[in-house]
Amino acid sequence: MKDKIILGIQIVVGLMLVVFGANGFLQFMPMPEHSKEMGDWLQAVYMTVYIFPLIAFIEIVAGLAFLSNKLVALMAIIVMPVVLNATLAHIFLNDIGGVGMALFLTISIALIMIGKKEAYRAIFKA
Image (cartoon, rainbow, N blue to C red; front, side):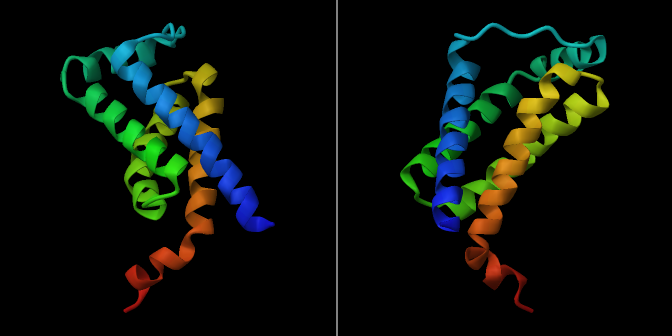
């Protein structure tokens, strides 16, 4: 039963990551209103030119891995810093409107990682 719940979360998160990643390249969803602090930060990150395409690429690859159930443990490790950074940016830059979705993704990926804990066992052996 627990495995089916984790798989369900994995599919939902995979779909969200693919859609948000594709939006990073295609801009088919309108950008929501942000707080001034978040807007300033996003503008600064946008000026680097490479960060947003890199994030979108990571989201798409991780989402496809989650949907295909291949390399899930590895992709969860790779995508977690991206999602966690988004969550913390929304929290600390007073952008309350975006906190919910980012927090949902962070918690969901953490649950996926807990569900795949056997894959991480060798990392923590010392």
